[in-house]
Picture 1 (tube, rainbow, N blue to C red):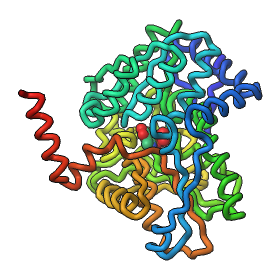
Picture 2 (cartoon, rainbow, N blue to C red; picture 1 turned 90 degrees about the vertical axis):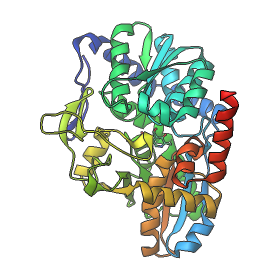
Picture 3 (cartoon, rainbow, N blue to C red; picture 1 turned 45 degrees about the vertical axis):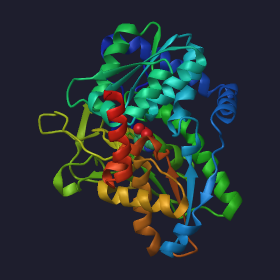
Length: 408
Ligand SMILES: Cc1ncc(COP(=O)(O)O)c(C=O)c1O
């Protein structure tokens, strides 16, 4: 019988009858792995030999000088293999799939980082792989789709609903129901039915464990604040979990899109627009209408454009342990530009939400304060969006010439 874990009033596992045995099997495999010290050792070994862990923390000297307030450090999850924290979750679930003896993996993906990470893991471990991605996001994030396919995965554009991340999750569950004997669904964030929120947080906690140790080694004290962007919540929970028991303020930054007042955003916890509901197998705060129909969301960052949020984060908000803010698309693009120019770092547009909020707050803190920003991923995948936002004429000319070359 599934342990239907709740976090305050949030979480649980609301499953169709047909998936109950599959979830039971997953809960048992996860519990067994968690209690077996060799699992974490194997996990750390894979992550250090294949994915550059431990990732460093970088002192952002120029930004610190510019804002003249807190000392700014950046946790470099962008240095993971495949360019984001998604690798932490995926490689861990890959090890579990091996333990369960399954041979095929499926995944949903928004920005595409989770899809690329899953396709990479499947190539390394020899699994068959299918990725579901909303049709809108296939168009927005073509370079990642290109790599998923080169890595041998089948990428299925989802044409249902609003054709974004939530629809890709629905399709993944549909596939799993028909193929559960040989297939594992590698859910990409700390959402969905138990054990996913706990399991993904457990695997991502490697970020917070390292970051806490590293900041103590460098500064001999803890940060005053830790910032992370929040899509489903996995990179935020990963870094926050290292500081939950410390007197450190934790700040989650959601997608403010065109501004909370416009309704075109994806802020579940920082806005007043979400309400508690059950969907996609779990209970959390969803952006939904009074009939429980999911609303359309918007963000410049495909990976933050999701209607629900981790039940663990929803509960941490209710407890007052995590503060939630939002950053608009415009603020995020400005923060990306500034970080590139001042530090030579190219944050993913998702990560730049955390940078934007930290930049708003850094000047109000003192030089005695340390702030730590999680750079959840690198921004190479966002080249088309960023080029469009800044109307880069040389890039446009290049694309036009390339198109003419293909037409010829
Ligand atoms: C680089 C990056 N950061 C953050 C996210 C948001 O996911 P989560 O909230 O689970 O960390 C994504 C999702 O695709 C991503 O690609």
